[in-house]
Length: 379
Image 1 (tube, rainbow, N blue to C red):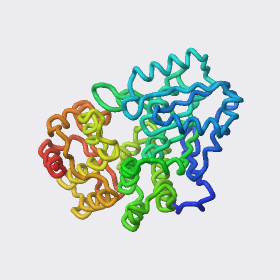
Image 2: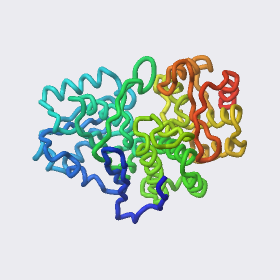
Image 3: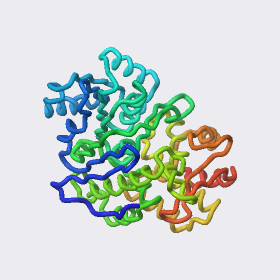
């Protein structure tokens, strides 16, 4: 992993290189949206902007701020539902139909403007149209900035589970404009912190130290501490995907799970989301999932009790749940976990910790250990 650094000055954006086979930059800072036109392919004549209905006002501001978009390109707005409701085959098909009607060619581009669901859906549309057109991500939530917009995973949901249909399709650039977080509801910002804290447990423990040393109320859009957390989390993901873009362990080494490490806490989280009809925020489900795998690692492995306790303490400190109070029982959630995309055949796989920043894969834990870990996180 590259050496961690603190945030740049407030006026200077930070550029983080994602060094995959098709490298691109993630730019973090305030007021970085002015870089959007420069990221579009030189041969592009048409630009499709994928944006949820709730961000129509923001879309108008973007178009007003960059008249070159509408002057130099034929702009098509693909308005989609909010949240996980957008991630359906029907929505993707409607987007494909619109691109076909507008005559989108392989040299044209897609821009996503929204949260993680918009990035997932828009990225999938870009990946599948003509087998791949350029996409630029402009994430508007903390969750999307540190997770969905970086790494090239795209996808939609099915009745069987979350993100089961998708493709790897890297963006040509990502703009994390922290100013966009100023209007983000507090509960959404808090939910996004789950993915940040996850990165602290699997790779960069300085994230945990910073969270523990910072007043949670001070983690606001203009706070240097929040910017540093965003930058550190993006660096963790950039380093992991550079070595293992397609989740095959790549160059990560025999013991390291590679990109799969980024799924820490996600196996149970996706089951919880599905059981709730996606009424539970992704970050809230991930927080519970992280505590679950910590409890599982303490039973099936050697994870120290103080590390398990630190999971609860750090997540609760920022206002995230550490126990599950939904209606689904263990059997229902277990059935959902069995069809998780990380499963291999009939074997459920979890990313767990041997210690801080030492993730490993636990394949086929006993049902007794899984049940005990679930009981430990049941409200």
